[in-house]
Structures are given as C-alpha cells and as structure tokens.
Length: 163
Image 1 (cartoon, rainbow, N blue to C red):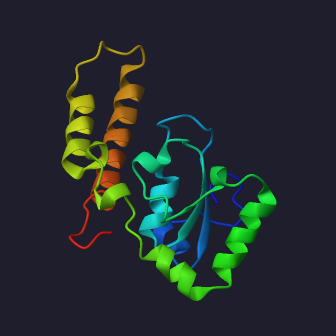
Image 2 (cartoon, rainbow, N blue to C red):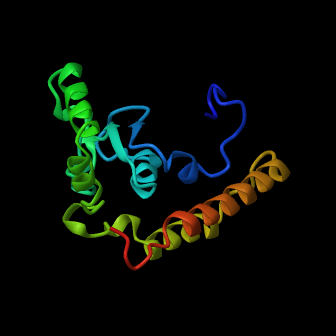
C-alpha cells in the first residue's frame, strides 16, 4: 500500500484492487464518535466484508449486519472465530454481502451526493484572507478542489440499485 509500499507500486484503482478479497481490514486511525473515513465505505462498495474498528457510533449510519465490527467482540479470539466461521460458510458470507450497506437501507443525508457537492462548493467558494505563501497555497487549493470533485464523482454518484 501507500504507507509502506509493500506491493511495489501505487494502487491506481483501490476498488478493483480489493474486489477479489472476501474480507478487508478497515481500521480507522483512531476511535472517536462520528469519525468514519472512507475505509469502511470503500470495502463495502468493492463487495467485500469489512472487518471494522473505529467509530463507536458507526451503526447509526452503516448496517451492522453488513460488516464485522471489531468492537462487538470481547476478545480477539472471538473475533477470529467469527471470521473463520464466515470464511468457511459460503451461505453465511453471501447473506452478509446481500445486506444493505446503510442502516435502514437509507443513504444518510450527510453523505448524499447533493449535500456533499454543496458542502465542498461552500468550502471552495468561501473567501479567506490572502495566505502568506499565496502561490503555493493557490496551487494546493486547486489540487484539493480537483481531487475532491473527482472523489465525489467517483464514489458518491450512487447507482439506482446501490445497496
């Protein structure tokens, strides 16, 4: 991956790269209420079963039947037993994969495409005082804006049959 470059090259398409795995470890950098990054979402979109650790409130938005929540287990042995159970039972794995990704099968308002676009548009259109290193900051701002719009387009244009 990108951090340790343990595969020898950058991954150009994360979804395509992870798509062939049954399980994906989706651990956040820290556990904090409301802090959920792309890690869980990317694994769900790729059709994998995420093994998630992070936001203690993650089930408010994501369907807890669609992923394995590390925090639901008293010991790591219990977690490993559950992973092994799912791995050895194709019907059980399929039943998990068929679950809707979002709680109550509803895309949360805070990640709906139109709301995200509006949010980023607000950020990019907000006037800020001239930065000290204006030219470098302007270039960085343009890179972030371009990347954010590409990310939104790639990941948040939900198809009609998205589960």
